Structures are given as structure tokens and as C-alpha cells.
Image (cartoon, rainbow, N blue to C red; front, side):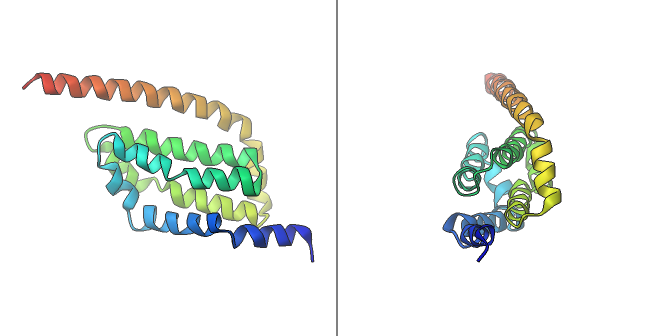
Length: 156
């Protein structure tokens, strides 16, 4: 038996991989991500924490830093979009389906899809830089939204 086939089979039958598929279904197909995102602040943090098993899968089982960076990038993009105030974030959470995107990307990577593997590897450095930028933007947006909320509360 081919070793890479055995590794692929082991990954696809692992609890982490099966959980990823269920999580993507619940979060994006059944719109749990946008519903949880309606809880100001805590919703976006919760959905980000729910991405940790995907990161674990990429780091520990698949052992791919470029894939891990791509998953983190998608997760942080989802957090940033979900944080946008005035209902914009809630609407964008319905459109941006990061869990399904990550699930498809991980599945294709495990299945040795050359186009996916090449794209992930080619973008790895840019993903690392984008992750830093997204972290800064999330911090700045959180500060701005916090000030906006304090101003609004001060009106009463």
C-alpha cells in the first residue's frame, strides 16, 4: 500500500477531519456562524475559537505550515468582517463562508490536488504578512467599536 495513500486515508478518517466537515456544515450551511456573530464581541471570538480544530488538523495531522497560514488567514478575515458594526458584519457573515472555504481547501490539500497545493504554497509568505495586517486591523476595529459603544452609551 502506498504510504501517502495510507496517510490520506488516516487523515480523512480522523476525528479532527470528520469534525471539520460537520463544523463547516453547521457553521456555514445552517448559518450558525452569522447567528453566533450577532452576539457583539463574543460571537466573533466564539467562531474564531471554533476554528482551532482546523488549525490543529493542519499543524499536527497534515503538517503543513502554508496550509495552516491559509486557514488562519480565512479565519481572521471572517472575524474582521463579522466585527463590522451597524449590521454590516452580520450580512457579510452570511456571504463569507470561511468554514466551508477552509474545509474545501483542507480536503483538496489532503487529496493531493496539485492546483490547491501549489496555490497554498505560493501564497504562504503573503498569507503570513496578511495575518499580521489582519491582527492589526482587528485590534484597531475593536478599539474603534469600543469607543463608538462608549460614545453611544454616553448619550443616555
